[in-house]
Image (cartoon, rainbow, N blue to C red; front, side, top):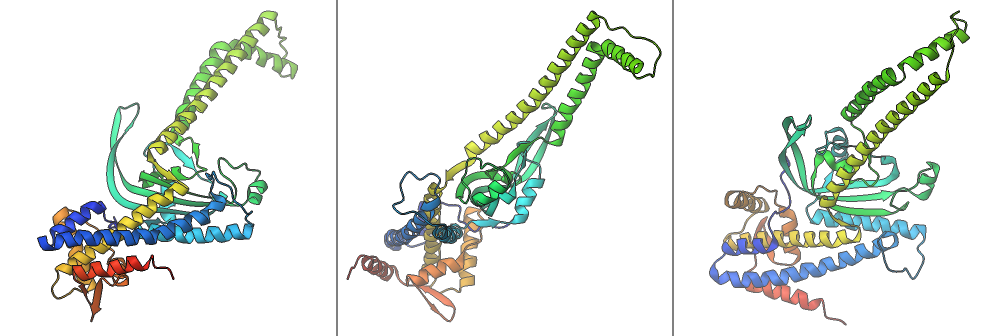
Amino acid sequence: MQTARYIPFRKHDIITMCAKELTKDQQTSFKQLYELLASLIHFQYHGTLESLKNNYAPFDPNSDTRLINSVTDEQKALCQRDFAKDFANVLNAANFEVITHQDLQDALNEESLFKVRLEVEFEDFEEVVFYRRGESQLTETITSFWGLRKKPLHFTNYDRVAVFIRFKDKAYFESKNKLPMGFEPSSTIVKLFQNVPKADLEMLFPNSEVRMRPIDKVIIGSSALIGGAVVLVTKLGASLLLLFALFTFWGGFSDKAVTMTQQHFITLAIGIGVFGSFVFKEWSKFKNRKIKFMKALSDNLYFKNLDNNAGVFHTLIDAAEEEDIKEALLAYSFLLKSKNGLSAHALDEQIETWFKSKYQCELDFEISDALEKLERMHLVTCTNTLYNAVNLERAKAILDERWDSLFQYN
């Protein structure tokens, strides 16, 4: 299992954890530094959020506002391109990982946890990208044979899954004589889910369709075959034998004449009616089982869905802000404790070891991102590959100056 990049602690908890590593004299100034740092990072991400909203507006399926100017296909394509770029950058900042094409194929081939087989028409999409954050190995008990058999199933679970899908244009769906189901051609949808087993990733596609599993087909087919045979023998046996004899006589295969009475025709009609009702019953049983599976899929998605379309931006922006703040604070506080400075590698090891030994948490700390942010804000200096934190008072003064400069207009 790959070690997670994201830090599975709240921002508030990280501040407390870092402050405990400093002296009492430093703790108050450190928390004041956090307030300034968080405000600056929040302001920076505000611009990213506005860019995402503006680029998504021309094809937002949930928009309740009007566009004052019509958008050409070329402008819409440009907006989609810029949106996809910003969206990927925010997900990366929030420490999401791209789910590979192989992972998606594995999901289609592996056994679903809630016993539903789904099929996805990938040709409907112009672009599909899945992202995940947080990976764990879990075990659930799966029952079969009406609860008589139980077995543990080990599976990979993703804490968060973000979905980016862009559909093909209207001409494609017209050429396939397909009617879009709940989405517009050429539109882009984004969704965010929680606690998704890797084997069930296919249920997150908007065009996934329920298909009967082989075992379900065997159960229904066997029931229909046995039941049908019983109906044929008990209700239509005598009438079918009489009809067979009649056809053989008409065909010249038999010299024995056959006489069909009114009673024979009544019996045959009743038998055909009974057999027809049996076929309808089995067909209804098949449809009801499929509806049951679709309900299981809907119920599952109801509790896993976190946000949709434009609402996803706010959630992901908040997650990216938190990760940036946590990374910067952790790197700064550990450098602040170091008297002689630390290399990037040594700092990375110290933070990861601290999490593992003190909080029983293994993670892959994003040291390059953390140092890049601190260098950009001039909160650290680097000499001969050794990084040193500027003192707390100087750091607060630097951030104060940066904040004031944002609101100075010429």
